[in-house]
Length: 303
Image (cartoon, rainbow, N blue to C red):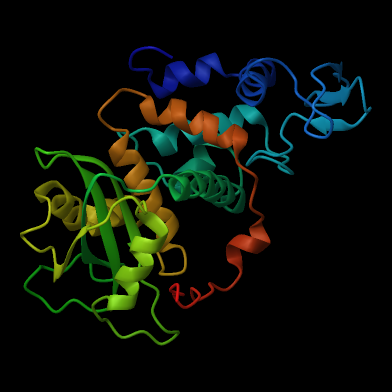
């Protein structure tokens, strides 16, 4: 998909199941079918169902095209999944789940689930990408209820998040993460504690980074200017599109915002990357998505 592709062009290209099947199969098995059970690379393709079924010629195990992907178990057509992927990744789009119901002619629950499963793929990919090199870390707050207030008015219900970025020698951000600070069940707004920064460094910064720069004041002026600008735009960016999100699902939206921003400098770069994530990330169920959020485990340090 060279050059800038519009959503209209995209939907025209992937207007039916057949066109979607071809690219999904190529993304899953770039060099042809590969059996996940025995490793054999030959299969008999059964096309009597909506999506093809692959039977390994060696061990006879069968697998569907969407098994092992974010779309596993979904009854929604691929040609409805694909536009949702494009709209979530496109930096010029502002589509939310309510609008997606009208675009795809699906229920709100289906639209909400599709978007959250795609966000799950983004979060899984982000977890594998550690901050390296020169790393700046600071914190800011997201507010899901008071985003319409002037900055001079009291801000309540703020949820803190830690922001970290890989920067080059010119102070330019090449990758960044925003990670929610989990508060007790009855939260009171507070700044992150030392243990919160320790957890962020342990989980999201490469062990080869010996001395990340940690600035424990909100939007500390010593941190990368670009990182501080990202932090300052979080509330407006999320609320302008989604009209406020709850702390329970905030992390998924923070990961989405990072993904969209990082990939916004090149046309459709995020769409191409998200295609691959969609095809190689195991799914998450609706039951898992709506389950009560768990508090993170205490940080364990080596003796």
